[in-house]
Image (cartoon, rainbow, N blue to C red; front, side):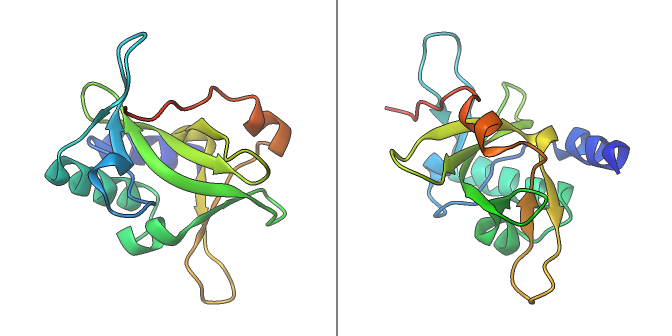
Length: 144
């Protein structure tokens, strides 16, 4: 499974997460040191979102509706956007953690897999990280 996920991630190319609200700020390019992230164009963001969803075996709509949960199904947060590297490959999800303060962290794509739900709702994104490990991830600083 890990190999197939890594192959899918490698094939992604231009992952621009749209698990958000379909605005172009939902997919950003990772910044140079000490700089703000750079939003992708609408077309780049749409392509990246579609490719990210395919890499996870989901539809774009399912990705946009997915929750981040742990292996036990406990809700840990919501995916707000995607972050790409300079080549356009999605590397991270921006996750708003459940709890006080609307803390947003950068969750590496390799730490997430899609899991089908038995209740007919959109698939969840599952991580093996605990809520404490998520809280210790680097904070996300949105574009200014």
